[in-house]
Amino acid sequence: MPYTVPKLTDFSTPALDSAVRELLSALEQESAAVSSENDWKAFRDRWMARKSGVLTQLNDLWLKAAPGPGKREVGQRVNELRDRVETRVLETKEHCDTLSIARSIVDKRHPIIDLARAFIEASERAGGQTLTTDEAFSKAEPVDITLPGIRRSLGAEHPVIKTMNEIIGVFRNLGYSVEEGPEIETDYYNFEALNFPPNHPARDTQDTLFIAGQESKPLRERLLLRTHTSPVQIRSMEKMKPPVRVVCPGKVHRNDALDATHSPIFHQVEGLAVDTNITFCDLKGTLDHAMKALFGSSVKTRFYPSFFPFTEPSADVQISCIFCGGKGARDGGPCRNCKASGWIELLGCGMVDPNVYGFVDYDPAKVSGFAFGMGVERIAILKYGVDDIQLFFNGDVRFLEQFG
Image 1 (cartoon, rainbow, N blue to C red):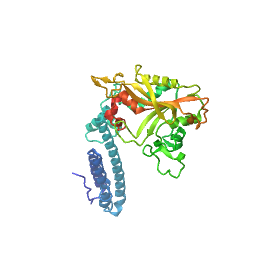
Image 2: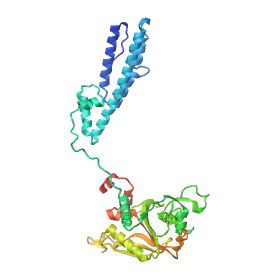
Image 3: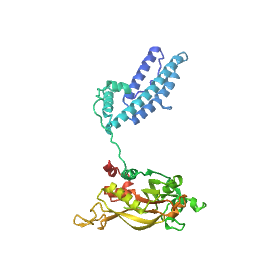
Image 4: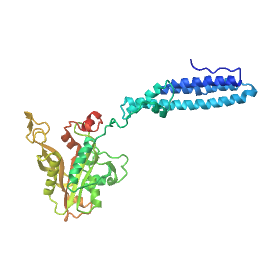
């Protein structure tokens, strides 16, 4: 039965001692019965609630009812009981929290599962007595801490980041340094300095994500989410003098609709080399080596004409299909990955347009260079056989743990 505060009629010292012992015994019993957060809240309210708690009833039924000469002794007893009750409520809360943590650790198979289970078992063996953490562990069965524990599973690089690091590693081995720049760029760095005329369709809002509220600014100062990492090349040439050899990895944004091969957010690695007497042959040799390093020494490359505003001449680069060996067919039918052509388009490149040098105070009569850019997700799709680019961004652990 729950403890009920008796109404005292005898305020002698022996009667007070007996009433106090009865109250403290009830306090310990109710504290030992607490095993959850809800139990503790009910226990706390029953003893400490302002309107009807046991401590409030002590004031009404003991202190106020005591005769004048006995009020001092009764008041001292009530104050001592108040301290004991508050202390026991706090200790019960600590014990309840520790038990809850221990149970959750056991449920989740945490590396300290044995210690947690030992704590619970020791508490239960105490016969309902509330134990502190140290007391419970001192009563627990000994644990051999030299035994191997349960290792926490370690994370792994995201396939996009892993692929990007592999690409960077290839060019670092060729002597390139890594440069990075802001994702929020000005129109000047993203378009103008890269030889995009003001009426170029890439500036259109259908292709580019512009920051709102920029209409009052001059066009070259308007902010946008960069559509490529090429602005980093401009920034690099502004602060470096030839020779320049940099790769520029990073996240880019375009106003593209979601589908299996397109995403409004993706990653690029672009490269730039500027020096004296650099030719298209240097570009071809560099990219051929990079593709062999990424996909194997049997991969072939081919270049065919294309157009980019910041390079002249420009080219798209294809590699021989890594799935069918460049044959265009496999398993008795046409190769779906290369659409039976034997080639897969992978990146764009070209010789830096002389107009671009004018924005960075390079003399096009003395220097020449090449630039290239590739989508990281596109290469990751080929390397890992992924059929939907959205899988890289959905955060599905079932997909990501395959790369652990």
